[in-house]
Length: 372
Image 1 (cartoon, rainbow, N blue to C red):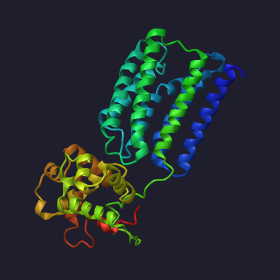
Image 2 (cartoon, rainbow, N blue to C red):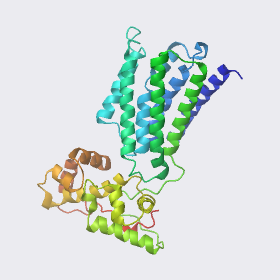
Image 3 (cartoon, one colour):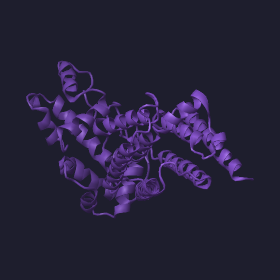
Image 4 (cartoon, helix red, strand yellow):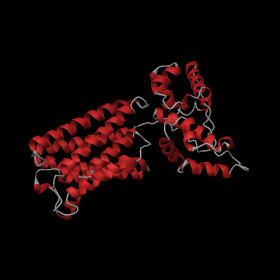
């Protein structure tokens, strides 16, 4: 089998696999994974269609032009997909969204979407600069949030992803500077295509682990389901009692500077034991989501309490343990699909004769023993 045949097989098989997996995610109802993986898969198909030095193996005509433009968008969707894999609350917004849109615009012009007169006019260097910023941001997010990641495989993978992306970016930069943007031997293209497919598949595996803990009871779901009786060991009962004291009595979650390491020390247990308790028994995949669930519960209590009727939202945010009003608004909107102010107004409207409380407290820790 000659290199040209290997090149064609890798690219065709890779594109087929990417599109098949995307369709499978939507069919099985995993809309979150599909939402971030499908645009990446389509753009990678465009990249595979043209990433070969053999012009006879590339798509031609309008289809080839479309594939070339789509390939320029792959970096943004890979960035967003990586962030979604390691943070299930991730949404493109703010500077992350603006940077992505900027990249898409520059890449479209560079690939000739607005005509050949503007294509290839040094815009690739602007994309390299933005790409460095995207990789730096991803590395910062992955390393910053690593201590609180409660899924062992995903926590270990954070460092690997940073090293792989940094290594790939450095290699591409050196090649572009030393060899030029047009340097593309066939062996290198085949290896690049195979490595990109393997990396994307590995990320998808991290997002869809073979077994996941049952999710924590949603704070908006009303009455918690009746627990199934289980026998707790004395050590497990001690941990749950200690956790209840920290949250319900000492209210350590109201400290915006609380770290996972400090929480482990307060629990008087090993790092691994605390991770298993919060992840496998309480259903949280990250320490931050565990804290935010209790901080949101405190915020709902304050927003619906007439005694806090005149409190400003920033006061409620800080007193509930959030580090800023912006983070409070973002987390609250993600949980309730409305702003804290709108939620408070709705709670006031129900204050006259509510049949159920406007907020539902998290079930006691001793009632969650069956949620593993």
